[in-house]
Length: 539
Image 1 (cartoon, rainbow, N blue to C red):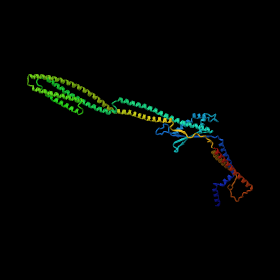
Image 2 (image 1 turned 135 degrees about the horizontal axis):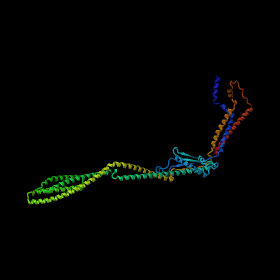
Image 3 (image 1 turned 90 degrees about the vertical axis):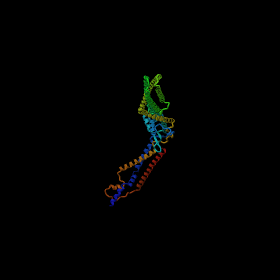
Image 4 (image 1 turned 60 degrees about the vertical axis):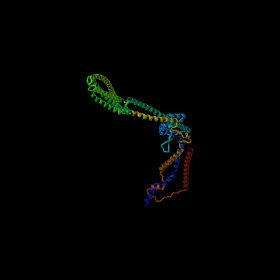
């Protein structure tokens, strides 16, 4: 049982055998220190052999427009990142870079045989443009322009040239974009003006063609139609009155003609009185009706009054004649004389009635013509009112196109005025612009190689190389160095051990070896520390 417990303890201690690793360190420390020093020296020395490159950079701020956007809205692309990318592509174009290369005689050493495209490609690799975001990381507040070269003064000159190109190109790009926007809006405004003029011409032509039939004239047409219908009714009533008067005059004329052709007493007179009375009642009723609508100066009222007066006079004369006939009915010669006088009066009355009848016929004809004219006008205005819905729809279609053209024209005119103000602001360089915060720096230390960084890389390479050499040498060594290794090799247990006999010369040799190892370790670390300090001071 004790042997089993001892074996279990040995297996647990095999996971981390510190004594073994310490023994390897004592035996193989030179195998570790020398590769460490050589690896570090190789990388660190390369940092001093590689040609240095100096990097000059400058910060360009993006200044917002001096005029608030509420007063003058910019008419250029507000996406600064897209615009900056476009400007960068223009500046890094082959033509621009070749002009800088020829101006400053870049890439002359070792590149005499290089093609222009190769030089341009190399210069693009040496240029870097980095954006600077604001605190919220949503807006771009600026960007840095940097250029790397072997000569620090050349790096500064090229960075200065690139900075000027960015500033000038931004101004040109904004001004050109603003002018193009204004020109485009002006062209669209001219097209809208022509379209609006065409729509106005169509509306005017339609209104002229359908004068009096437009929806806006419907109320006046209704009023005129109402007046015409009233006039037509009055004319028709006047025609009827004139016809009745003509019938009456014709009947009266026939009676007078019959009386003039008979002898003795006249019996037809009394039969005329009811007709005359009926005529008077009709005329008076007509007069009362017209008087309720018109004044006494209305022509029809005045004519009716004249007609009533004539009829009343005729009735009075008829009654007087009948009375005279009744008184003189039994007389001889006096009756004959009176009869002759009566015949002359009747002939005069017949002539008067014929004249009145002729006037009546002329009046009837004129009034019928008036009725026909008024009927035609009533039909005309009635047709206008009937066509009003169709005219309203047609005019609405034309007006809709005109309103759209007018709205488009007004909107473009407003945009054109705003764009013209924005273009003027850009030409006065009061818009968004780039401003160089500090002039390009003159580098005093090389950006590449970073010798301090190379020291760290060399240390890592040396450590890896030393560990690799130690592991390889330990793997290739087939000697036994510890008691555990001997016990693991023997199949049987060890009964006794012979202790190591150390003589003074062996002890001195072990001490010298240990001293040499510590001295070598101190030397290696001192060299690495001194090299790192020198790299830090010299950059």
